[in-house]
Length: 603
Image: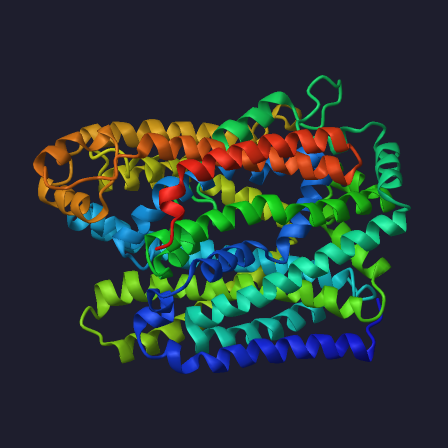
C-alpha cells in the first residue's frame, strides 16, 4: 500500500492534535494528584463512558475478532460476548458502590474492605501484579497488533527478520508517552473521545468498501460459505449438530455460562475493576458513574462489533487460506492479519491515511490509558501507601509522571519480547484470560458476603496462578488429540480456585466487626449476606433494591444478546428475523429503563 501526500498529511495532523491536547491539559493535570489520576472527580458520564469504550477498542481488537471468526466462525466472538452479563452486573449493582467507596484504584478497596497486615500485603502485591505484569502484557500485545498492521499495509516488503516496524511503533509509543505524561487522565479521556470517533469512522468505511469489493452482501455470504463448505461461519449460536462443528456445545456453554463470573479480564472484570473503576471514580457522582458504565456496555457490544465482523467476513471471502492458517498449528501465521490485508488491498488515497490513523488512534488510546492506569497503582498503592504517606500533591504529581514513563518503558520491553517470540494477539487474549481464571468469584462475593476476608482474596489469587500452571503442565503431558479445550481448563481453574478460597475463608478469622461496619456505612452494600453487620449498624439504610437491579442486569444482557444477531440479520437481508429480534431487544430495553428510572434521573 503506497501512501500519498494526502495520507501523510492526515497522519501528521492526527499526531499534532494528540500532542496539542496533552499540552492543553498539562497545567490542570499538574495541579493535584486527584486531577492527574481522576480528573478531579469531575468527569461527566458521556466523557467517562466514551473513554471506557475507546480504551477497549485497541489496535488488537479488530485483528483478534478476525482471528476468532477464522477459527470458530461468528460464534467465536462468544469469547468476549460472554462477558456482557458481568458487565451489566457492574452497571446496575457495582457502579454506585465503587463511586461511594471513593477509591482511586480497585486495589485501594482492599484496605477499605479488609484490615491488618494481610490486607496491606494483598494491596501491595496486587498493585505490583497488575501494574508490572498485567499492564506490561497488555501494552505488549497491543504493540504486537500494531506491528501486524504495519507489516500488512505499508511495510509489506519488509524482510521477516527486520525490526523497522518495531522502531516505528516505538516512535508512536514516544508520542503517546509525551501527551499522557503531561496531561494525566484529562488528556487521556479527551483524546480517547477523538480517537474513538476516528476509529469507528475508519472501520465503518472499510466495511462498506470491503462489501462493495466482494460484490455486495449476498455475494459476501456466498463466497465465504463456498470457501468453507458450509455456513457455520455465520452462526451466532454455534451449529452443534454438524459432524465438524467449529465450536462444540461444551465449549460454548463454558464461555456463555462461566466466562462472566469465573475470569478476571481487563475491561470486563467481575464486579468491576481496572480502568473501568478508574473512570467510575473520576465521575461527578454515582449517577454519572452508573450512566457512564451503561453507555460503555451498550456501545461496546451493540454499536462497535459489526464493522469489524463484516471486514473479517470479507477477509475470509478474499483469502480462504486464513482458515487454513487458523488450524494448521503454524505459530508464524496469524489469521488476524486478514484485517490489515483488506486495508492494503482496498484503501484508496486519503482513505489509506484515515485507516492507518484509525489503528494509530485505537493503539494510542489504549496505551495512554494503560500508562495512566498502571502508574496509578504504582503511586497510589505503593509509593503513597508504603513509601511516602505524607507526600504532598506537588511531589505526588512529579512521581506520577515518572511512574507513567516507567510503565510505558516496561510495556515496550514486553512488546520486544512478544515480538521476538511471535506471540499472536488472540493467543495473548487467551493467556491473560486463563491467568485471571478463578479470581472472579471472590471479586463478586466480597460485595455480597461479610465473611470474605483478605485471606480469601490471597488464596484465590495464588490458587488461580498455581492451578493455571498446574493444568498447563498436565495438559502438555497429554497427547495433543486428547487435550482439553482452553475454555474447559479455564473453568477447571476457576472452580478449583473457588473451592480453595472458600476453604481458606472458613479456616481463617473474619474481619473485625469495626472494619466491616465502617465499610458498610460508607458503601451501603445490599443483600442478606450483610445481615450480622447490618445488625451492628442499624442506622445505615442500604438502597434495598438488589432484586430490581439483578432483574435489570438480566434485561440489559438480553438487550445485548438480542441486538447483536438483530443487526447481523438486517445486514444480511433477513429483515423479518432482524426486526423481530430488535422488537424483543426494544421491549427488554424499555423494561430495563423503566426499572432503572431512578438511577437514570438527573443527578
